[in-house]
Image 1 (cartoon, rainbow, N blue to C red):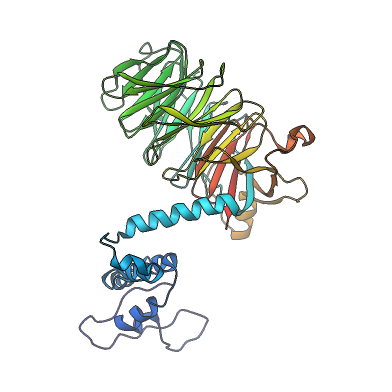
Image 2: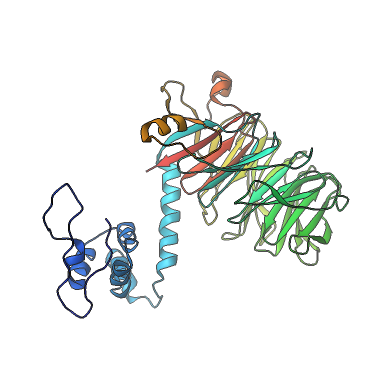
Amino acid sequence: MEASSSRSRSGGLPSKRRSSGGGGSGYGPTAQSLSDDTLRSIFSRLDDHFDLAHCSAVCKSWNTIISTGHLMRDLYYKRNPQARSSSITFLTKSYFEALAMNGHASTLTSGSVEVHQWIGHPMRATLCRMKSGSVLTGKGDKVLRLWSAENCKYMNEYNVPDSKMLVDFDFDENKIVGLTSSQVCIWKRSGPRSIFQSCGGTFSHGLCMSYADPEVVIGCEDGRAFVYDMYSRSCSSIHRLHPSPVTCLALIDDQLIIGGSTFGSVAIADHTSGERLGLLKSAFTPTVIRCLSSSANSHLIFAGSSSGYAHCWDLRTLRPLWETRVSPNVIYSAHHFPGDTSVLAVGGIDGVLRLVCQRTGDTIRSFIMDAGQPAQSSSRLQAEKKHGCPAESGPRQQVEKKNAREIAPDARLDNIPTNLRPQITGLSVGMRKIVTTHGENYVRVWKFRS
């Protein structure tokens, strides 16, 4: 509903506007003709915070009525009457964040799943990142591509300069940051050309990176981590993490550098001084730590290893909370939505997407593609014909929609065809979505519905 406020705030009669609905030519009542008290009374009858939030986003006057009337707070107390006697101040932002996290976790653990798949690269994509509704895919050919997580629409692409091959990448709302074996490359999200390449020779044999503006931390084959400042365009510090190659990295609150190794241990170092503060070890060795995911909210570090184990350590005690073999083969990727303290997604060589409980390590749900459901498809070319206008430049991908098939945690995987469970080489978790890459030229987004 569109509502641009045209009422007189001095109490005069509202100006009449011709109704745009239907095809009628007469005048009719509109939301603009209602008084503030009437609108406040209507809004107070809503029993869902998200419906109230949607109304507050319609226009400035509605937002003012809802916020000054404290309708969010009143609805919260209506649902939680015991909170009225509490001394804790109601904070709208915190409450909505908690609602969103609970909804996200509930949908992942009990909702239905639909898979959207499309050809995203000319050769293959092995890594993916998802942030703020955008998906970045690449590594395997000389191009990174940005997509909308909601409708799988192509947004932009970024070409790797010279003859370099990317080994890792990340992004935020302004920049794309990529790592080759010896250089850092930066692109503006609004343009395909690289705006900066670091000088070679600062580091060699870079294997992984972690990015938190304005710094990139690079893990190398010699066990060192190089901290690269993007504004000064120089290496600001070098830290020794392991005597063996650094296989994966994570940053926590710009204070700690977490690095996995081929020896199966995870080093914790102070971001500023480089002092090693602890070493997390697995009871199941030998193993290679292949991926890391950190949770500052719960002080936990999660990892996936070459032996199929998912690991969880508590940073406060430097001890493992659990180590569970969730897969018979290598786990390539583990990730959870920032702020979520319930669900960890893992994927690897066996091609099963697993959702694991962060507190216990138990497998909650496991998914593969459903071969019994016919695929529905839609393409940009069909959209152009339907609407009679060309789409923006970029690949004209055809998006197939399929259902996911849930399997038992102890299912015999050798009885499931490998075309239904291609290896998961990378995954990233967003709000009620998980994007996966498979070492092929296609990309998948798993959408969870309540």
